[in-house]
Image (cartoon, rainbow, N blue to C red; front, side):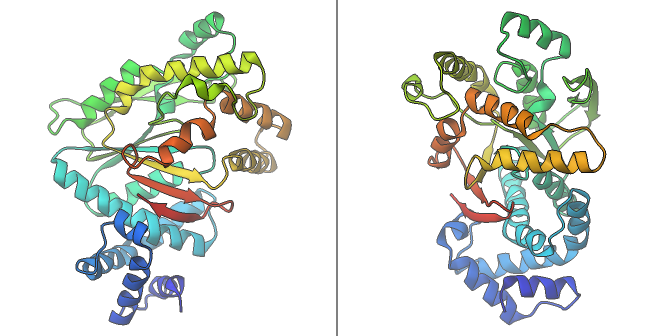
Length: 349
């Protein structure tokens, strides 16, 4: 029997027993990196495993329904991510919230297909069950308006798509996160929201969403927390940064990142969803577009996707910008390896 057999028994209503809990604890302690991440020791481990098990049986049915709605169908994969990542992460966020005595801002860095949306939706569900109000907001919600981006593109025609550094209202993002961090609120907080379907897919800001408070904020995006690097790194850059023009674009985007550092300073924690190979994001995007086309919705061709993804690799290349973070526990609290089938691999820091 392995841990998935145990989880499936719990899904079937078979209650947990002492031998199962001790087996799960032994498995956790067998991976020192992960045990360290979740704060599991020989002394407190059984208590933490019991708490996680109780929470698992309480939320697993709703979590499975959410995952199915998002297109995640494999039961073993759902149960594995629930047990290994989603549950311990939420329990940890509650501990951080209680320690800070104010709302927590959890940054989530991850590219296309790494599971940012699923993580946010499942976490909100689990945290609600635990009695906490969680919200998710994306860096995409802080895009400049369509009119502002049109003016920006006239100044810099290289900004052919929204997304790279410089296309966001950073001051608004800082203002909103600062409001969300306050322990006591006397008036509602207005969250910007962005509709990507407007203006033939160029997108625009829509009506602000009003909330009274949030205990835990999940702030996600494809370069959340990414810092400027030494310009010497662009002397021999990875593909598809090829031409002198490509190098200059990469340098200019790197320089734009300086404006985001005060925003990253509002984060309490940073989690990275890191593919085992950054090139998987292109494959995942193709799979997602093919599903959309098969369902009768418009989507990009493989060639258009390659052009789209490579544009973002030229602006902030994962090898140049994400790898240094993954190797730096002083800047990152948690790294979650994402395998080719979207399942979770190693978890460390």
